[in-house]
Image (cartoon, rainbow, N blue to C red):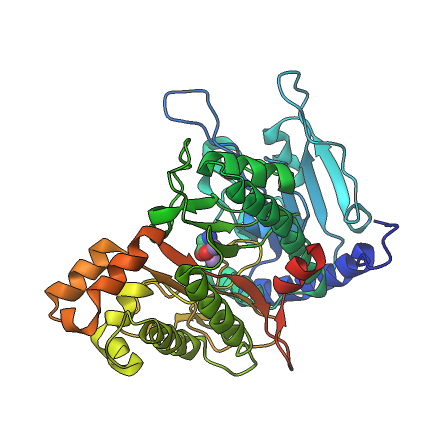
Length: 450
Ligand code: GLY
Ligand code: MN
Ligand code: MN
């Protein structure tokens, strides 16, 4: 794609290199599984039970790894080592719906493309011997009599491909940076809507409008939380009326770019001179520091534990905790305020694959005991992109548990009462591990937009 913007990455060139990498990975994956062909269906449209209403179509991530196509159900990728890859592209004759455009873009020159009009026509275009194929996809993609050609999802192949997906190619990083810029446009519009007194629903609409993506196109459901709603980690209710008064706003919202996700959280105080704003600022500074530790050879589990100590230190500074950060970690009291993981891998999926992978042959690295929601237990390596998303929340259910477990004296309850009406704070960026300084992908997008 040519672009008048001289800063725009050359996606033609980057994609060619990306494809070379994918072929090399597929060669190895097929060799490990003992298969001759990699076959990947894009996936099918799903319908509500006893109804003809469809769910938003979600492309098979194994398919969008190869192709910037997120809206072409019933299509197939076929790769045979040493041969030019093939795309079986479903473009139905259909006057009820808008059908996918004819194939175009920076990918087409690299593939043999066969357009089919009916899903079952794909069968003639796929390798004849299904038993020689690693077919990666959902069961509903099966074709042929009695579903003879059906996904077998061989573990050896999937383990290898998913593990390798941890290492983002320059093409993927270019799209992920773009996903950051898109989301930041939404975050800025959302903050304006918040300051203008909009409801959660109104803020959500302002976000979608600014990003140019509808709810079904975003990489996950927007979390738009005013006041106490910030204490619900995945609050997605979208209240239709603004509360009175409005005190605080937590927005966790991303954007998609050719199938790649961003995942960004910011928290705001209505009164920027308030103590809650000071607490936000402290978490924000701490988050920046945590991002700077995303380095080759660093164990992400350790970053998560370190984050508990840092956040408990902030709570102590603000008079919420009465014990040392180390004691709060040991007794589980810090987890009452920070009850989720520090972050996760991100890429084609917002919670991307292989966060626990022990090796490219399988195996799982366990979470540290007492940290059941951590989604990344690996040692960081160059090319990995992870989120760094510390938070401090005032969650009644968890605070009650602190009392029940006999740690009520660890906390100044009058300080809890002061902060509870604000819900919580989360600050979330994406950070790329390199062989030198980490690259925060999110902050420059905010700086550019300012
Ligand atoms: N938006 C979901 C998450 O931060 O993981
Ligand atoms: Mn998030
Ligand atoms: Mn996240």
